[in-house]
Length: 559
Image (tube, rainbow, N blue to C red; front, side, top):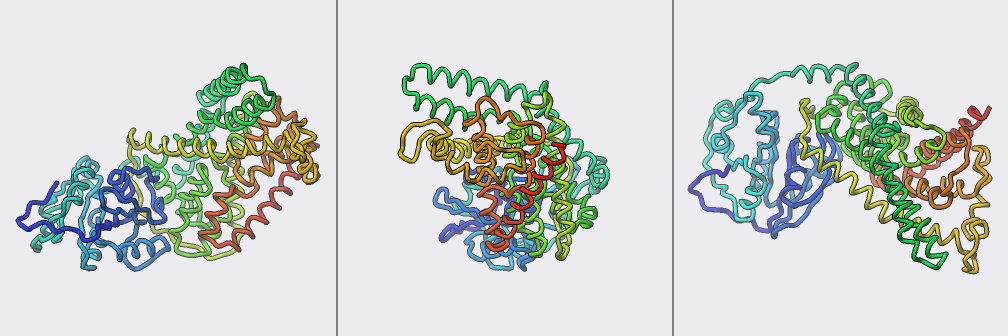
């Protein structure tokens, strides 16, 4: 709503508007609405780890990380406090469900002397539990404008000039706000139980893999259909009228066979991302972090690490960024060191590439690989030295996910994957195709006589203990250091008839991809958060573990 007052409008000088507030109050959601952006949102503390800004209609909006006070507790709070100092206008985003706690920060922001607007979110949830809010009375009590309107109306108010000269009136908060039925719901009580929360999470992940990988489930059926359309029908239709063998090979093998083959995994990735989004939007991930804090402490992690580990199933680089909110450097580095062992979405196509030819139903094996990676990350965290960290975080009530929010996040995930395949993976496939079909004298030759074959033959011996003697597979494995999708794309391009590997060698390759360092994006994120020296050290150690671990797997299953 718009606050009625006789005071004249006060225009903002340079119009730098900073969105501040407690973690998980809805700042990024509001920022997306005000700036027509698609920044990632989430129902847990630490999704926004660095300020983001965008100028719309002459106003620069800044989405600052969440904070509880202007005195710094973590790196993300330091950056938020710095943004607040540079603001011409502060939009304090507060959660209606926890308004009494949120107003502690509101009063500190008002004390800065800068113009402050209070924007209240989650009013519908407040009303459902019997609470109420009188925005006008709250505005008079605080002496600042209070808005509960849709973001578009708020945007018009900001661009037109907001009325700030509100005469403050002393009144208790109870005259303007009622929290309603506070306390835990039945669902909250269930999911805040550490054993139920952990058991539910394991069951949900298992169900996710079942729907994605079982040959009779939608994920696998749609994957086969998509692969047939891209690699068979589309490829045949395009190349049927071409006469140049080189161009045919580039289109059918390099572009559609390589990058197009990776795109065929979109249905299964959609299932994976859908489940992760539902866990997030329902508040279950937040509850899991709270419930497992004590269990994670036994392996030198806090419950907050659950956010990072679950995020790692989607993207390792994004998971690394969530560690910025950790209070201690040792806790942050320990989490970053173990995150590469959480299988990200990009490893899924690789596992399927090597296991699908051997198993009619790859669901049990791939599920074991994912949980093995999670178990290994926890084991390594237990072995690593360093101080522990207490957990300070907002806990989201368990609710039914909103269809619109789930759809937006799913679109965000899949769009990012498609852009990556259409950009990085496609370019890599074209370069790899050229190197694998031309000699050093730039003549079109057979693959075994190409530049890529000559170079890869030199590196192939280090893969012999994995049962790998084909230079194409050695090259494919090394491509994973750039982006894990490149492994599946390279195999599809260079070995369209299949790898021909036995069980021991296939599991060894999967183990290598599972254990090796994450992609270039994750390496860059780690350098930014933990430093170049630490990141290089982790890279070397993880590479050694990847080779030794895959050698051991081949030895065990090859007996």
